[in-house]
Image (cartoon, rainbow, N blue to C red):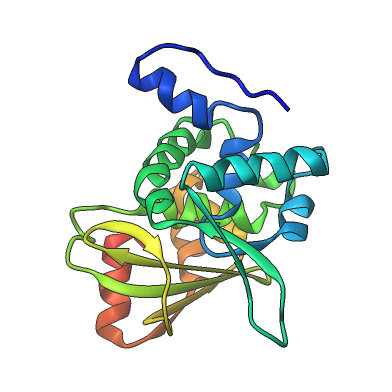
Length: 212
């Protein structure tokens, strides 16, 4: 399967040689917040052909953006996750694209928000690097039955490791509404329905860093 190559010695063209293929950014989007099995990726990317998904994952591994690992017994399943380089280089791109698209979302009232949309809009886009500069901890977010785990390190999102300092439990609709609600009252009501579990100081630091 051939891939696009712009054959230009330009940083944008070189970046698009890796990230510009169809489905590539959406595959990387799915890996934000924790490892995913191949079947998980297929389920969350309706319309992608199985051979194309396999090809894109191989390309991203070769580019050093995705890691592939086999979990030990009794699980024994292959999972894909963002590499350290992926967290450092890809997250700013995903955040920028998400900021561009967030005000183009259909109103939540028109249909349910997915857990991933809740995570992207409510958590990832709320990060204030200045307020998060001193944080170094792992966090867990439970959204409508789907778990996301990530860490803050030197003001940047990174892969989660170990037990979370804070666990957030919320619906995707409430997380989106905290950012995109039509009024202050609507946003405040949604925020009050979000549960934070952890040491009070850790919770306060997380809420400041994410404007929650």
